Amino acid sequence: MAEAAMAARAAPDGDGDGDGDGDECLPRYRHLLCPDLLAGQVAFITGGGSGIGFRIAEIFMRHGCRTVIASRNLQRLAEASKKLVAATGQQCLPVSIDVRQPQSIAAAVDEALQEFQRIDILINGAAGNFLCPASALSFNAFKTVIDIDTMGTFNTSKVLFEKYFRDHGGIIVNITATLSYRGQALQVHAGAAKAAIDAMTRHLAVEWGPNKIRVNSLAPGPISGTEGFRRLGGKFAEQSNQFSAIPLQRAGSKTEIAHSALYLASPLSSYVTGTTLVVDGGSWLTSPNSFSALLGIASSSAKL
Image (cartoon, rainbow, N blue to C red; front, top):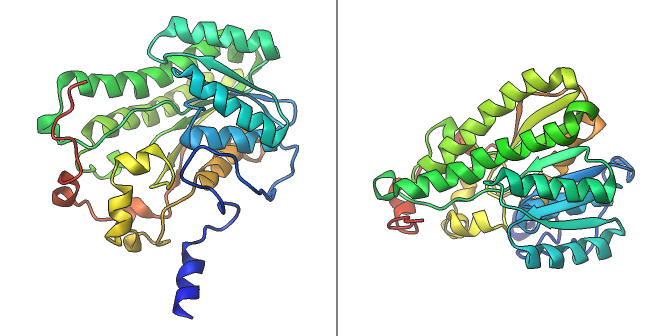
């Protein structure tokens, strides 16, 4: 009985089953919303070749959306695109970009518009992170995270605004984090970057609302099967039973985050803009800020 209860507690509600540790499509999927929720639309997803971005692309495609997946590694994107098309039957265009370079983004957006003639949704998912004490963090390492996360989000949003959203409307979902809510140990670089994105979300929602553009943030908690989970102490937290401190007593799944992104990108949230949707099982409210424990798995220095 106890083992069955623990198994039930560990299994995510909805369709997280089979989420897996790698970047593979779900072996089975049950639609919780109508399959044509995003029919005819096109989503541009940075960081779409792996992790949460890959699952967002899959779930969007399973709901009728065509996708553009973008990152620096074109080979990984091409492999991801083949998997996504095979699993969903929808079109997926892989494009290589560096979100720190506006010219690179502009070329990718032009390619996407030539292919699909429209872009309805932007998911800003490109990010970089690692654990490191502020005292050991190089100046360039801090700047690199700001450049990828904060500047990358602004650059991509501005390019999409100028090339399509200003005249046609659109939806922007920025993937952020709860790190800055209380000051997470070993995360000053990522916390500062994500806090800036949340502020940007509110400013752009105000300025671009009249253009029929909705802008929201999505802040995941610890999500299993992702690079962030591996690099930011997820396995350590799992092994040391730290997830028992989370109100829902488990890590989240990539599919749960993708479903949250689906909500923000769909007509279900048609009157929602300028806000941050936290999807973390209540983690940031209760999880220990274990500085000494995290030091054991942190980078002794980050010299990017």
